[in-house]
Structure formats: structure tokens, C-alpha cells
Length: 316
Ligand code: UT7
Image (cartoon, rainbow, N blue to C red; front, side, top):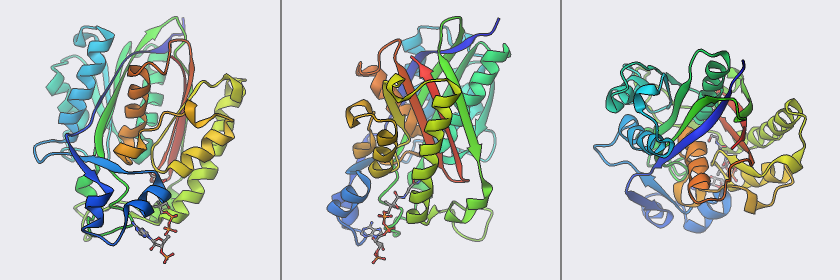
């Protein structure tokens, strides 16, 4: 018997502190109008000094568990996607396991930059379909603010902090219809963040305009790949839940899917780019405010450093 991975819970957390474009314009040479027109971002959340990827992940995960109304002890796999782990090791997955007190789960991290949650969903789906796991928690959690050079106007305007969570369980009912993930390490120099063991400080470096062009083309291709694999066309997709990097990139993907922007879950304006957390934060928002309904088909997609990119088609 092959099981589907069915979504039974979602959660999200955003730190209390909000940093607006106006505030950033006081410290670097930029403006609210430039940032909003080029990116669609107005403000972002910034983690407090005592917050970490695992502390934010815990809040998002507990919300997902509460929505699913399951005993946390039944979770047998925890996957955390993060590029800003609490420590090099133990993994943030293990730290989250400890926080949740889920003794019997296997826990590990996935590092695929902004595509991390999609990679996490893909791994979770393979485990569930193969019968290796029954209930899987996937979390994307990021404190991007700690790997940003706040004097670099080309990157400091883009990113924010937060965590998104999704809980999946094996079901005979449809859930994840397919996942598609890809990598191309050739693009390292366009978008990277050195580790603290390298000579440079550990800040994000991005050639934004070049990344932008590859992202638009690549996300267009992943839409085709996903629909073809399921023998579906654009009209079958009810919602697009994209990685929130730039409103112009998102609009291009929506156009490719012939979706109006009303069918796109957008969180960018007041969250910025939360890297691996962004897709799960947006999915959680769409579920909790009632836009995404049971039985609807939702396309999640992301693109990030590596390059990495991927999609998950979910019948919610
Ligand atoms: O999440 C992972 C994947 N990441 C992405 O997908 C990000 C993709 N890239 C982007 O979203 C866009 O490329 C950016 C928003 C980062 C930049 O927008 P752009 O339209 O590609 O601008 P640009 O880099 O071509 O820069 C245009 C001009 C430059 O000035 P000159 O050379 O034309 O005189 C920049 O120096 O804008 C200047 N500029 C700024 N001006 C005011 C760059 N950053 C700023 C700023 N404020 N913050």
C-alpha cells in the first residue's frame, strides 16, 4: 500500500520587532519607494537577541501540532531547513527535538538555502511514501538578520526572520501529489554566505540582478515540470505559494500559471525574504485565514543559493 503525505497541521512565527524601509533608509543610502518598487517589501521582522532558529521553530512547530491535534510523541521524523542554525552542530533539528520533547523521532537539518523547505517536504514525502516514517514535521526557520551586512544596501533591504512549520502524516487520502527538487552548484558566486571559518565575515553576498534572471526562467521551468508530471494544466491549480524573494519574480510565475495575483499567497510586503521559512510561513497564512481550502490544489515553489530550486504540488 502506498500512502500519501497529507497535511494535518501548519504553524508560523514572526519575531515581534518590525524594521521598516523608512528605518533602513536612515542607515544606508536607499528609500522606501526604491525598495517597494524593486522588491514589493515594506517591512520585515527581526529576531530578538534571545531568539534563535530553534526557538522560533519550536513556536511554529507547536502551532502545527496543536492544529493537527496529535500526540507529539507520534512524530517519527523532524526535518529543519535552515541556513542560520543555532550551532554548526548539534543540528537545529536535534535542538528542536529536545525543545519539543519528542524522544523517538529522528531529527536532522537540510541546507538548501531559500529552497530548504521544499527540499524538506520532498524528503518527508519520500519517507512517508516508502513507509519509513508515518508522521513528519518539516520546519523552515531563519535568523537572516544575523548574516546580513547592515551597511550593504543591496542585501540588507531584502531579508527578514521567522519560522514556518508543516506536519504531514501517512494517509490513503491524497496529499502531496509530487515534489521536484534540483541543484546546480555552478552558480556559487552569484549568491553565497561564507562560514565563520572562512577569512571573510559571514555575510550574504548576492549579484541580485543576475540571480533575478535565472530565478524567473528556472521557476517557469519548474511549473511546467510539475504540471506535466501530474498530467495537469494551469487551470487545475487553485493557489500559488511562492518563495517570497521579489514581487516581480512572483508575478512572472503567476503569469506563467495564468493565475491572478488574488490566487497567490503573498507575505513579502511585511515579512521580506525569510529564506527557507518563507514558503511555509505563506502556506500557514493561507490555511489559517481560510483562503486555502481542503481539496484545493496548491503549488509551492522556491529558488535559492546553490542554485537550488524546487516545487511541491499539494492537494490540501
Ligand atoms: O531568495 C534567494 C533568491 N534571491 C532572489 O531571488 C533575489 C533576486 N534579485 C532581486 O530581487 C533584485 O535583483 C534586487 C531587488 C536584489 C535588485 O533589484 P534590481 O532591479 O535587479 O536592481 P540592480 O541590482 O540592477 O540595481 C539597480 C541600481 C544600481 O545602481 P546603478 O548601477 O544602476 O547606478 C544599484 O546600485 O539600483 C542600485 N541599488 C539601490 N538603490 C537604492 C541597489 N540596491 C539599492 C538600494 N537602494 N537598496
